[in-house]
Amino acid sequence: MRPRKVALLGATGSIGRQAIEVIDRSPDLELCALMSGTQAIDGLAVARDVRHVQVGGKAAPLLEASDPDVVLNAIVGFAGVEATLWALEHGVTLALANKESLVAAGDLAVSAHRRGKGLLLPVDSEHSALFQCLEGREPETVRSLVLTASGGPFRGRTRSELEHVTVPEALAHPTWSMGRKITVDSATLANKGLELIEAHWLFDIPYDRIEVVVHPTSVVHSLVRFRDGALLAHMGTPDMRVPISFALAYPERPSVPAAPLDLAGGLDLHFEAVDDDAFPLLGLARDAGERGGTFPCAYNAANEIAVAAFLDGAIGFTEIADTVAAVLDETDGAPARDLADLVAADDAARRAAARGMQPA
Ligand code: NAD
Ligand code: MG
Image: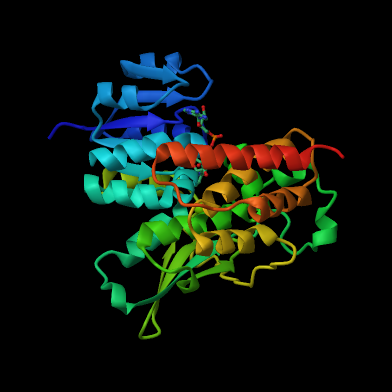
């Protein structure tokens, strides 16, 4: 059999680089296209003889020209929406790391997926875990999904203690090494908020049946509760090459050189509740998800703008949540009929967030 052709979008990022490692090791996978936002990728492409390469711009022409078997969308932020919709509409297998696209475009993505009838395979570790625990189960046997959260670097702090935390402190994630935006999202728990909405769309489960629990060691990647009281958990050392490989090679499950989990050495399987007062962005996401329409799109857009401002030193850590809450308050959340509507909603929320952050 010829190798599976992978179009890798977001090739220079944290997921992108780990995906290249996975693909380089596998004779069954071959890169057919590489894309980044602004960083040069010629070196990556030449070394692997990849002809379709693009920095910035629209993903569709690159995808049309390179004719992939799998699109790995590892772009960060709303910029990934176009590629997600393209793959779903065309029935090309989508390995999805870019959670923001499913959060913002949920309804449109589900419709495109129904029309295209391709595979949608999550790369996010929690969702890869849930996908694996759910495989082959009857939906009526599932009571709830349980997303685990590490709690980030500020677990245990109160809201007032979070007011003066610095950018380097927010970027020091205890268990995962990732891009800057998702690392800040993990510190505010917006990442878990985005993942909650992502899980709703991926697994077609109402929000009141998706739980979130803090699990500081990130050994249990998520769990499914069944109606007979049994729980299935997915465990392993935190290593994104595992879910990346799972999605790219599905259903083959080839070997990955991840460190084995040391069971006899003593596993820390501690779980605790989320502190909703200190980390309001999770509750705001649940609320936005339940309201539906473009509320999740506005949540995501406001968060992207606020996180960028925090990283630039323009606002404090707790102002990220304040900004998102204020934008959601002034948004009408009208559903998007198409991508143009969605882009307009995203843009309006970005402008509202920027206005709200201007010094008085
Ligand atoms: P990153 O910042 O390290 O990399 C982002 C990549 O996207 C870069 O290659 C950048 O050039 C590219 N990019 C940015 N804007 C673009 C545009 N307009 N067009 C094309 N490419 C563009 O981010 P990351 O940590 O690799 O995360 C990527 C995505 O995967 C995010 O949605 C994140 O939430 C998700 N994710 C990441 C991890 C992780 O461990 N890093 C885990 C789960 C999910
Ligand atoms: Mg995750």
